[in-house]
Figure 1 (cartoon, rainbow, N blue to C red):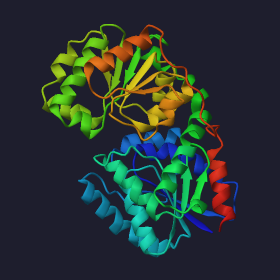
Figure 2 (cartoon, rainbow, N blue to C red):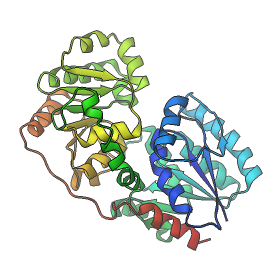
Figure 3 (cartoon, one colour):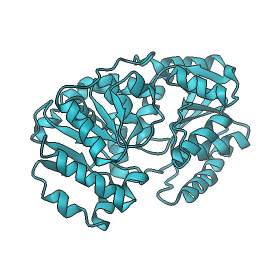
Figure 4 (cartoon, rainbow, N blue to C red):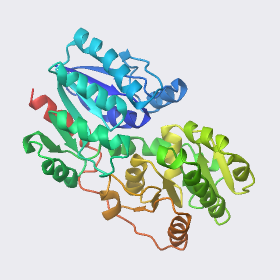
Length: 363
């Protein structure tokens, strides 16, 4: 049995790492790792691979940047050649990036089974490119591995075969559990001059937030106001940094005395920073899940979330991009009024083991 596991961008690395680990228990399975290179910052990619103990990719496509159509097309062209050369029995794709969609379509057209990890997540906002990627990948996949029972219901509602759906839990949490102690030993907050539990942490990268100058300007207002009440750390995504400069917003941030802007962080330092924050503000999907496990209040700077379990059962609150709404929610947290949340079902650090056992049993 030959499995080809695909990663394309940083969020994928944390999801594929525990699956690669779990596959080691099955010596009869040949497992190849392919990196499409959709996330093309080689230095950051290398850091993530090293931190997560991921093996060097067997195949690297080096696709790089481009529009959604360009990235998808280039991945499909290159991935087709890989499939014709290696003839895998199963292609594992994770998450919702362009590589996930491209590799799924290409594999299915060549008669190769597809396993989608994190299936069934829905924001019901088709303006999000990731939502289109999720819907199409799920429709094509032979194995749909879900993180919640609600995701199962989403898939069944869309008419997908219940026998293809497997609720296994969240592989992202497998990675967090494995590396949490290592992250703690780094002492990252102290190295950045921050007191544990006495700072806010913010990330921002989605196009809806950073590509519109009016929206980004309002979020800069939030940053400026909030840092007057609590020290605020802002690891800036390259896309966000470019837009801040382009829209003339950097000068205001540079005058904020308690705002610290730093480059993007590796997985372990960022996990350490999340675990010791008073609150986290983000538009990332994975961070909503990680803060729920860590018990850290999270404010999601979007109008919706494809991970509603982090809201109904976790520490997450969806607040949009209105400065007044965000600041009121943040001040409630700072005053000690916030939900503690619970650990969702099967987010126990063993999702990848369950997932791999199903794949091996069915082939």
